[in-house]
Image (cartoon, rainbow, N blue to C red; front, top):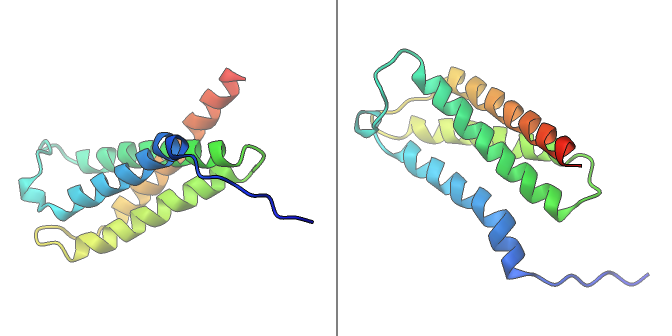
Length: 130
């Protein structure tokens, strides 16, 4: 059995994988900024809503990238969820070392719920398009 030779398509990488990686870099940047310097409204728990939305979007980007890469891979939603959720945990650890930020397990919960919501939205849209 000869191994399949795969070529790297730059347009494919830029269209599917770069958005997820760039968005992760954007989240990292925001996590590096002191909370006092962020333009977040002073409303109770708006922070959790922001976490939920940003990680829902990240999960959609990862589901899209993985699904486009391996069309017959049934576990792409689990993989996308895990990548997103583990990144959320690493982001909270990162914030522990940023002045004016702190580690918050409730943010991790919001990240996980957001990742799950993003996966569910992606699957819903995917089913309606087929």
